[in-house]
Amino acid sequence: MSNKTALVPKLRFPEFRDSEEWRQSTLGKIFTRIAQGGTPDTSNPKFWNGTIDWLTPAEMGKSLNPFIQNTNRKITDLGLKNCSSILLPVNSIIISTRAPIGYLGINTVPMAINQGCKALMPNPHLHSLFLYYFLHANENRLNDLGAGNTFKELSTNALKSFCVYFPSNQEQQKIADCLSSLDDLITAEDKKLSALKVHKKGLIQKLFPAQGKTVPEWRFPEFRDCGEWVIYPLVEICQNFDRNRIPIAEKERKKGSTPYYGASGIVDYIDGFIFDEELLCVSEDGANLVARTYPIAFSISGKTWVNNHAHVLKFENSFTQVLVESYLNSISLSDFLTGMAQPKLNRAKLDIIPIPLPEEKERQKIADCLSSLDALISAQTEKIEALKIHKRGLMQGIFPSFEEVGE
Image (cartoon, rainbow, N blue to C red; front, side, top):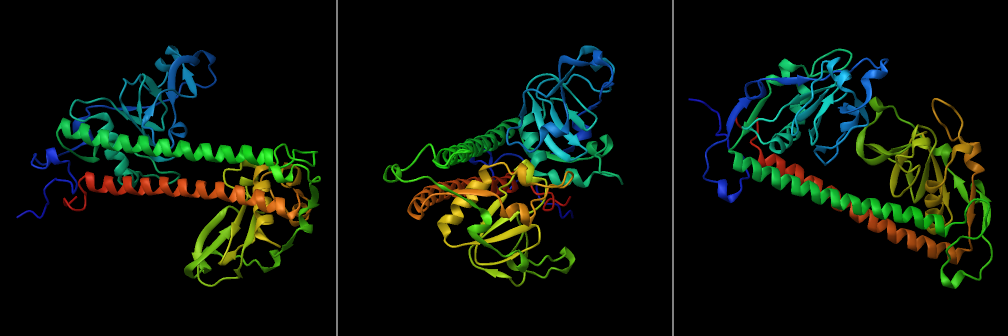
């Protein structure tokens, strides 16, 4: 007797609960051809700057929007004829098959792909958006099929062997509509988060004096007749605790509950602590000092551990710390960085960064305003993360588990 479980997901929409089991097949059986990508000769100008969209894995990323409407680079008809790619019909499933494996997209216009991608062209048995979410839910399985020493690559034969489960076309449509609606909601909430961050950035520009000035453009009513802000070197308004930092190699860290901070935030959780108070960390090195993908100044509190990639500063009060953190994250530090390949903000340069500050009562008012906005940003971030967790859980229930059906 077989130990296989029926091909039925844990979660099923009411109208499909009495429907037949899901069917099982492989991509190779469903798709008679899996299209390979290619790149025209980049030195031949006749092949480039045409009208045909040409997609690379770098452009796909992990966007919540599955639909790809255009690409950064275009090729000509002659370029398409002189490479191994074909013009994909609309609604093809495009999969990045190296560097990295598993990025997914659906083209809304005919397009070509480079050699880092493969494509499954539309098939009446599988709704494109359903298959997109099915593959997305099984991204780890796709990655496991990759092979190679220099870098992993998913071959056409390996992709053909990939096992898929699918219900009727009507149920596929229902699942696709449900998950795409959830993605639309997450995208909308993400736009709200982006708007809050843009608002904060603009507010900081108004609430702090512009470079070369000592009075901000905006001031709370009760402070409009107050004097100029004072410019302090950073070293004069804080204590530096860099000497207390202790870096620990990854293999020597004992796992625990204490956040272990590096240049851009938490990098691990370990046992023990070296700080137990409210402090400000400022990145000492790393590309983020230029790219600013993450804040270069961030507050820490409670029991913490910091390695030697972040400066550690202690301020007299929390509202001054809030102002300094916001200000450092809003300005360019290019004049204070050393090193070309690896940007570095050393202690000597850190100490002389000029910080404009008003009197304490105005500092506190501005800090309260910025902290309230930070609370909104944190709440919105948590809301988005909760929606993403909900989506992951939903996908685990809405698709049959490979482990449970005996794969």
